[in-house]
Figure (cartoon, rainbow, N blue to C red):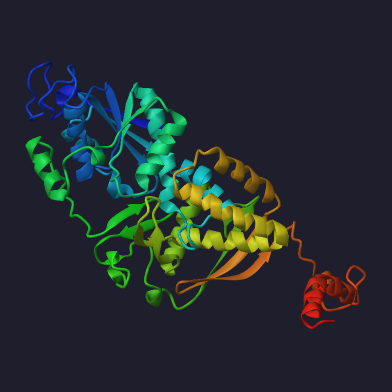
Length: 437
């Protein structure tokens, strides 16, 4: 359910009063339009930080519009959601909309990627990439609910997120206008933003700015910036927030059993849980053992390389379990095709093409091919490592009576001689040619 919080214009700090000049130095009225044009209402992806706090009055000044702030709860934590109504109100927003998207995020975005085995550039489990389309989709819904004719976000022109937001907007409502302040305004950094905020009577957020750029949701926590900008620097130990240092993890291993039905996790240690609850529990268990730390240099969609450090404790456990169960339930050719498609699947998600027909078609394949990927996997967690100790499935293709070295009726070892002669015939013919035989 959406938490719709309307803020009375009379109680805001906006200073707007009909056609009179506003008290916060915004030089145009909502009725006459702004410096760059006119929108009636804009839905802004809002975090409450400095950038989005400044965007609110900037939109009003430049587009003469009402601003509806939208915040999605994708598991970033209570502290990041605390006090948002007051911040939006102080910035001049007419309404705050908060939606809890945690279950939808895990069920409809995280688990399909998990089922597909989608990993970007060998390491990245797509935490931010999966979160942006669910947020952008909700923004399109909110725009319809409140009658907005435009949407806006605070992504910079150098990152991947701008693409992910805007491709979702295009796919779900191509009639919506998109306003991207970072590609229009003259603000070039934090000091400029603070000066703009003071000029327009917008309280500057008093929270201490992290030296890192972070993105957190229920699936992962990413770290970028500061010393990480140099790939030669080792991350500082106090940077991590979801996982303990493996060296400080318990000296005794912990075993965890993951139940899976048709490629989708459903239980932990025999206890059935909702998608978000299951992931939360595994984050806690995995974090305690230092599971899921990744340090990588990746290729951004816009062309540059960037270095990031990711914490994905629960996700790392789930990926290991899913792959191990597939070793029982999928044959060789199917695994090879699935793995090759998983690379393209991951690339599409990373590039913001969640609602592209190709990804949706590939997802249908993944759903079909994992129909029998049902069973359980037992894992041992110990000081940053995840080791598989057992796997079982009612649809297992593994047959002990065939795999054993004992003779059997199904597999006659003598048949191998003819198979090898036929299988190796091309190599044998080439060797005969080279030797003049």
